[in-house]
Picture (cartoon, one colour):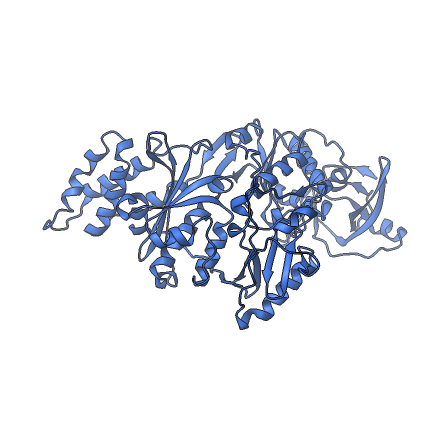
Length: 587
């Protein structure tokens, strides 16, 4: 065979295929030659390839042409061969199925196809089991066991809950325990989430049992600035997303007694690390850093991996090294969420390219997209947000004086070009570097949220030693027609969930303060509170989502919650189609 890393695929002729005994063919995309002429392909098959002292079973394309067979890029990568510097794909490429014979697929699409073919045991879109690492649960000495009894199950859900328990047992996520043979000391209640598809998912409510008593691993989550230093000199970037990250880690046998859940079918305990445990982020971070240790040009933050290189050759070598380590450790990825060979990627809320790090525009879009106030009420809301941040910007309030005149009692509403220019100027100031601060993982985080009849808003801020809160990012969206019919408490809770999920990259794995002007949510979403039995389905679901975060809830009167209040009341032109909400019930 001819060694040709310039061909993305290895090929043999139909004649060679016959000499191999006509092994079964599979459907395969068409190939195109360096002359842009399509190559007639019969399909692809698996063959044993012996080279460089080892034998591997790999795919090869079968073509009608009688040319010499090619040892292409996909086989080079499989054997871990060093690739020539500045390699260009010139001899054979795959054609995209949607473009037919008219256009070539992009380079990163070619790489994605090859990698998925070479590492089918990594790109599975299912959770794996990490080899050589186990999760341990350590509780404080003063911790006292808590054993919750099974809750009543809605009759309509009994069959689906049984099906889900059977699935978790079959997939070895759970194992049943018999209290008659061994006493159970810890047992958490469960929350049954009804997905939009109608399927049930079961989660343990650990925030009322072990989470308050866990001895946290103080292994530090890496600072963004430290992560980025590992990417210096990069021109191409790939991002790998792990599938169901925590469920890929086995729980040590003597720690499973703390992860028991109570159901109407009895007690079960987790064999794999479940969702909602306070110590999971640091543990998983430490594990992934050990797995990927020694590889240059990569960085990992919990379940998000980024790889770079100064050129395609170096980038591919590093990407290949990462995937080999993931395969060795038994880690699985979500292929549909991975990106390869990109000149620019979004990672941890920042846009990264060869020029450096750039903040995404999302954090200021809520302000920038705000249209002009159409009445006194909307103008007062806008001025409330401006006034809140006036202490950070010299002379800011001077720009507001003409607008304040319109809010006086008895003053007729008159809006013209002068007022429009003033509001645009204020919006530019609010979204400038003079007002916004950069995220700093050493400073305390505060998330303030609010809701009104038609919108939800959130502001993420840093708390400074002087007691001032400086904004990092703003977010806001309109409610859907269904959400507009929510009760007040559900709307306020939705604002919290919107803010937490919107800023998850900043909040996950960090301790933060959650500010709300709705007093009942301080009790319902309290970090040590049991998911309320009488709460609505959606409140139950949202309480479960929050259980994965480390936070405290603080009630703030509405008059002190001006920025979030303003964002929730200002109309935004951009439409938003909300995802269908899952519902949940206590079981």
